[in-house]
Length: 292
Image (cartoon, helix red, strand yellow):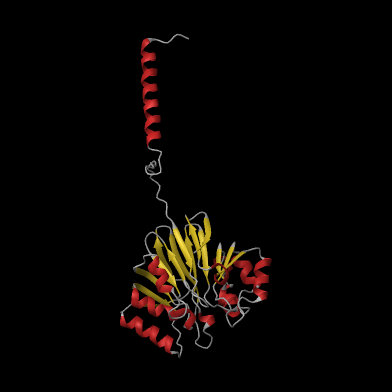
């Protein structure tokens, strides 16, 4: 095939720009110079920290816009220090799932060290000094206080939010079953946080099993056999289950029957007493688990 002069000139110009581009890219391929193609698609990243604070619960959720802290363990067991290491300055939402000291004790220090946008609480009364100081500190800093009930929803970012699945009408006569249960949506990934909910509370939540399906479950009541009934676990159907508990705790947590039921449903189990703080990182579609 014969090429005319104009075609040959275009080929030479094309070759020149091709060689120039390859030289330019080679010069920019070092670790100090990384170039990416801008994209119109906005991708979000999220983190869920299951903080190792011994025998208790403390879960921190971070999104590009807002954050959430669920419980804080016992007093002075490290939740403040952990959050400071993450350079946290403000917490948009704090949930005290129920008034036991291994859930709200550490929140007193949180209120003293960070500005807090809103506290959600089941609104049941306890008779301990820890509970009284927890309430007094909320009042001291004039933090907005909301009684959490099933059906409430809170936005965390454009593609993330959390919803409350429990309680409806909690009683001070059984504080564990007064626990706020929150399902956190991070893009397509769902994380279910159950406080110390026991089998009676699980039966109540099971009235709407379609709300329970989640990729990750925070196992109820530190792996106690009072919780994690088989019908509940089957409805949640978690790929990953996290147990928050302290090494050598006096309660014997986690109990053997719970571990057996978790094994039977085929979920991967991670524990603070064995793995330390557990970190879930996700882009809203896939997720990874690592340890801190």
